[in-house]
Image (tube, rainbow, N blue to C red; front, side, top):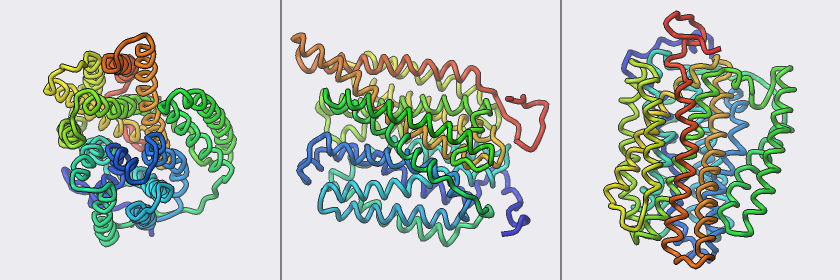
Length: 486
């Protein structure tokens, strides 16, 4: 591909480039599968004869694989064309979906989920990198609002979608429904997708690949063990510390490789203040979102007696509102900047989590719905500007590395949010039961404390939002109206 072909005219104002629309659709389909198995755990236990702890691995293995594979995507996306990356990612995802649908045993299902996740891990960095190349800086907020639908809303809608599908039959339907949809999206994308960048030959440090997989994968695995009961906490601490130590080795290795210009994950992205602040804010947001996604179904089903379908319907409005507001928030960001959106969003997140600290066995369902919707709206107001500011604060040659680091931290934050709320809830309720308190009040008290911890952590988001700049100039331009961030 020639340089001229890559410097194509900008699309008309108000129109999203076709390549971005296609990638948003494909990314939505694949990321939806990260949380689609949440409501299927009881079905898996009955159908495949596994324990609850083992069944949870259909979600844990997905996050584990994502965390291990995403660090490689920065290098991978530089080596192949847009069409090749799309074909490989969707092909791998389809293979994993088909294998999961026909899995005769739990082990094969787990393998299918790992293959699914390997394909999914490529799609978000591909989408983010492509968007930063083809969308002009002044229009990125609006387009990033549409991207929010794929990256943030898909995981939020996963449990709701699975609750609806599981009313129709077996857990295999979760894959049989996704398979033809993903197949059509793949074929349509390959017919319409154009290459927007020229691949370049670059080497890869396979030692870094192994260390990254062990470090990030080990960290997610260790965090996931915290929710597996008394025996899992001690093992979880050990594996988590080992993962953190391995990540430290990975960082040291990347700093050495940066001298030669060939790191697996370029940590110079963290030198850009706006990107780093956005990364922290989005990590706290994902932690809050996944933590609430774990606690609310437990509360609604175990303590309030709702079915998976009723639970899905109750949390669905929040996810839908989050998606529908994405484009509007993007346009508001283009017009007014980040301050009128991110700071109120961070405060709204804290208010919603604070409201959940008052849950009880008699809390009205409309109040649960209102608090969940407030949380989702607040996250929408936070995510879209943060994605745009963070990636826009990087020079073009760091786009792929910035998006892969963002994807990795998303998985770690998701695992941390899950582990944190489950551990706090279990420890509190277990101690109360040991003191003679009945099971239901003890569990309610545990959930309240878990939401208190999440609300306190969300205060970090408020502090970071206060420091985030209103706008960032394009890397190749200078604008006196837009303050420099470095």
